[in-house]
Amino acid sequence: MTDEIFPVLDWARLVEEAIARRKAENLTQRTLAKLAGVSAPTVVKFESGNTEIKLTGVLAILRVLGLAL
Image 1 (cartoon, rainbow, N blue to C red):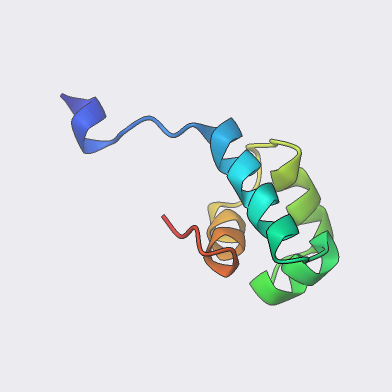
Image 2 (image 1 turned 30 degrees about the vertical axis):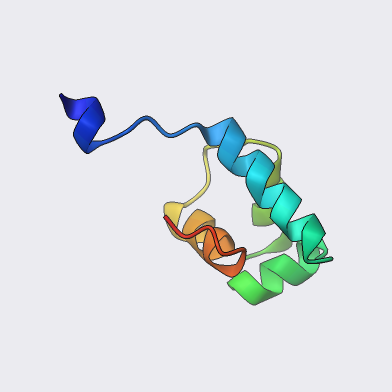
């Protein structure tokens, strides 16, 4: 029942799609960071699959890439 309310997030797939979108838009990690208002190391951590980053940073990155949750 809770899976219907809170579906399981496939983190690896989300990161993979975010990287594909960034590259399709010809954005560097540094440029994405500036647009999202986060640090370049935050983008690197996100793209390496690190889950120990602030949710606000992840949401900002996804928003810039048109992947807002």
